[in-house]
Length: 273
Image (tube, rainbow, N blue to C red):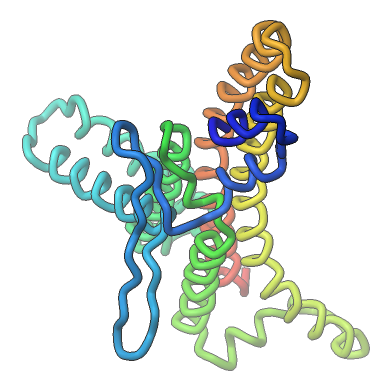
């Protein structure tokens, strides 16, 4: 926004689209306070070029935060938990009782580590996107696609482990369906098997990127209309309101992704019921 505003003041038209996409798209340039632009390197491993981007750095930060919080939660064990220990225990108990056991059933406890890891990782990545100079890793469709692919593999492996390879694919079609409908039901169920992770991917990506676009669009009105009054009366108050709503969406999207993952796992391991 600052660079666009300087160009606008020099007589060049303000390009709101460029300013917005510069913020939400991934790149190998990070802007840090008191430092300026930092160009991230590209790793060359076994003939592959692996660029380090802003979203990769944010995922590393999220992983480091999870490890740090876990270490703090395990540092002191007492009969009455408090602080980080209490927050972690509350999150684990919530995922175990409200998601794993309710949606998966008697086999739910063995999926708690995966579900808790997914929930906490998405939540921290979402929260990092609200920090100035940071970026939202879950606003990158490659990241959400990887999370959805992990959920897809977990669902399929769970079903195969429970019923075997043949039995798992037999359970894709509801029991009691007339044979005449099988030519229709089998393709529909196969498409549904891939549509579930696709929906997980798009839902998280779209919801996380939409809030940032709205906030940046509201701020852009100040430069487009060249009016400080627009910022004082319209842009800043509405952008602040959307930011508060975004905090709710951050927690909601982490919950929805984890809840749907547990639901799909439950449908796979309890197909005969």
